[in-house]
Image 1 (cartoon, rainbow, N blue to C red):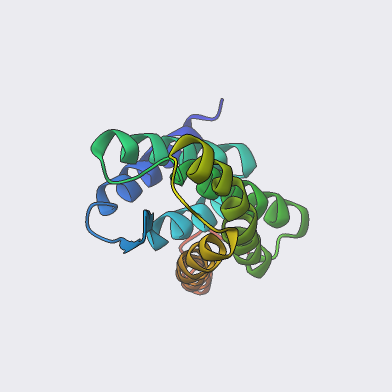
Image 2: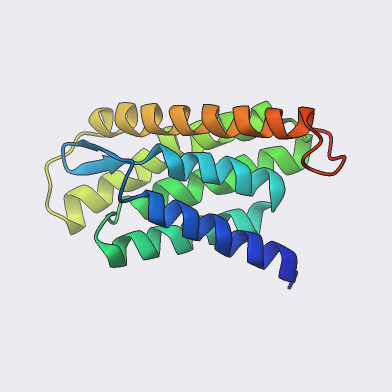
Length: 163
């Protein structure tokens, strides 16, 4: 295992977890959390698929333990992180990392959350209610992540990495 990537994963997960108690938007029985999507884009680009998914899993677990997240955090964040990282790894295009996050979380993650809402939590949910909430959250966070990565590239903060 790569110590540098493990450390960055832990730091991103920690910052994301701490900020979850400060920045979230309750929508029905879901809490949308744009900072998670922001972290997913950063992890996807800086760390790659497996560390991005690990970051999303760690953050979701810690948020659940702290009471600032719910079961919906797992499928949305992990699918979004994976798709963002795979698209970035294949293309090296920052915009596709953001698009992968939005499709992965906003559509696929929302669809994966539907059975959790209905079968496990006993909540009445419609998939068409979950998709807009997840998409708005992931789009907001993905745009933030894209913007920060662009600034970091322009200022050479990434040590010559060209996105």
